[in-house]
Length: 177
Length: 248
Image (tube, rainbow over all chains, first blue to last red; front, side):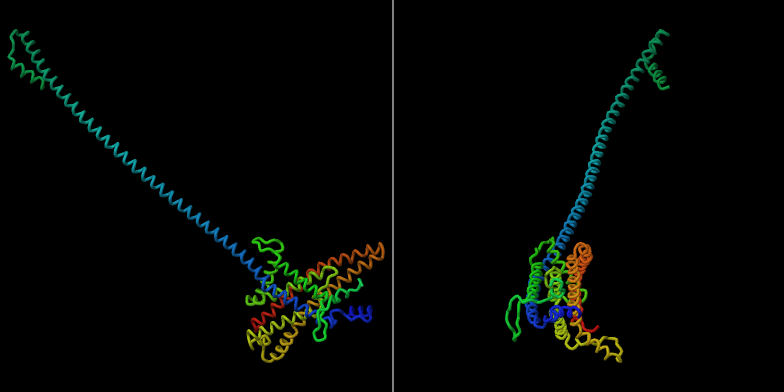
């Protein structure tokens, strides 16, 4: 190796090349043994379990948070669904109540109307009866007046009071005709 | 001294710990940087918060965790997660020590072959022993690719066995050579700046070029520091995949 020759030329009596100085090997091996075994023990007993646990904990925390978020989302979804179904139920109930009320009111107003109509028709019938009797009365009055008038006319024309019966039948006949 | 591109790789003894079989065991600058890397990794992985929403440092820690974990899962399957601590340690140790090594005047741990060889052998023996333990003799199926004509099977097996035993070599030399070459190139270009700067005004003007190159190389070395750690880790995963699922 060129560098070795260079060093040898420089130092003359110096050992050729540090990495090949055999008298340093034992010291290095002992140091390496102690250092590496110490490192191995630190790494395997403390460092790796510690860092591994930290990473695992983080993974678990993330997964836990995600699961919790999913759970909350499900809960809110369920709440929304419950709210919607409740709302629909309330709406249909309100409609039912409305329809029922409307029906009840309709029935009541119908009944009232009927009662009123009945009352009115009774009144109407009464009124008709009154009218009929009044007319009858009036008609009988007309007969009396007509008979009287006929008697008076006949008396004036003939000077003789006619027979009441004949006048009555004549009036009846003309009234009918 | 400043112009010597090899100086940065020198091992200097800080103090002696003891002797094993007549061989002195010293606490060196390399040891210091090894422990510094371990400390930085520990600080990164343990010193950060555990918030639900991570801060910057916590993000870095979690990104490294998930990066290595996904690398293992995609190359060795979920059974490969058994080796998560090992691969994570290798990846972070190489990457952090490489990053520290880019800072001027520091030392790069993986620029020494003995370190990378040791790490590669850890992987090699893990694969070998775990493969034999888990699969028994079926483990040797990795040397017998299916669908190969019987005539050339011995040759293929020879190549497979050879490549299996050469794995730690390529595994370690790749990391070592990359770090060594990168740091030498960086040091050479950086020393040009000083040498040209000493020549007066014209030298100052000329030094702009190596300065730009040094900056570009530093950026490249940052990439290489990460990339070599990643390559080391992903090769480890691929080798472990053999141990987990022998037979091509």
